Image 1 (tube, rainbow, N blue to C red):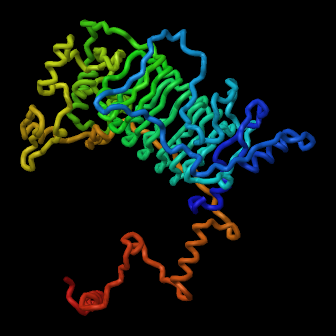
Image 2 (image 1 turned 120 degrees about the vertical axis):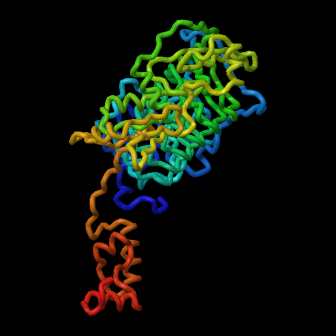
Length: 512
């Protein structure tokens, strides 16, 4: 296990394997405890079915995906115009090369739709029985549930848990900061936690053949993502944050009820393969010249977000949540909330039609000629301010000036002095508008029980050995409270300074 986990953590379960319908789900049993548990449940009098124990070496893990990168000057797309009711009946399988995973073969495992991932009929897989904690490959092992204890896998780089019966992924996956490849295809996942945005080193993300309805917007934080497979799901709308994946090369959204594609994806410079086959894409756009204008509340919120004006700390939580829900305009990146305008464009790549959809904060254009002409004009006033909002206060007179904006507010000093008294209980502090941005929150790490003296962890043993060698027979003198805070000794060094300090304490010297 590479010394990553302590002895107590090694006994914790990584996940749970279903014992129900085991005869219907042929799988590769890799764990002795699971084999013993299945024999105990099915009865010792019955002859156990022969199982195959196949060790997963590092060579068996998938190294990369076949991205089929074509000429860098063009974007390779695959599209098929077929109605949703005529989708093919065959199930899409994930792209595994022959010899990469011995537990995978053509076809997907039979999955019971009414399976409930509770603790009844589940057997735990402890960490100590995993062949490796750096590259974990549990494909087609009947895995039905992941434990929140995966938060202790800080050094895991590859996690392949495809072809199983998983219904959800715990939010603790955000602690696996070293993860570069995540394969959860061919499961029953209904959603992806937003904490996946903490996986900053992730390069490959495979979510094919699940029951996903939406993708979290935090996926735009994966700055190193190269391959994203979302095919064979139930996704109806793609987040605009996909346009922030600057290193994305392959995007597969085929076999989804998607009608339009966000225009932000067209800004990806390195995108070379976009698979959109079996999607009911629109073939034309009809622009509505009449739209509902934003409310006064939204106009005020747009100004606050666009100019980054600080808000009072005692502002209501509903208003803070409303300000944090701002979205970006597809053209000027200005904020908008409920009111927006849709514009579309059909582009052709390799004789295929791709519908780009723009969501604008206001009707910037109505025709394609207007859109092209705006590309050569400066940004409109709805764009975010280049400099943050700053308020300077004069030290002599209570005058306020807004620097970086066009408005300058000057108040009478006498009026300000007479009305400067603020009622008690009213906070004068302000909150930066950037701190209200919605970010995923990681759950707290589970607390491990304190080990008794005969069962010390590996790290505690190493600590005791190192301290015993350094200290020897002499005990170190306890530090004072100030020394513990400052991290250094508070006793004066020998020299003139210490002599003067002693003389001052004794009263013989002059206090200086």
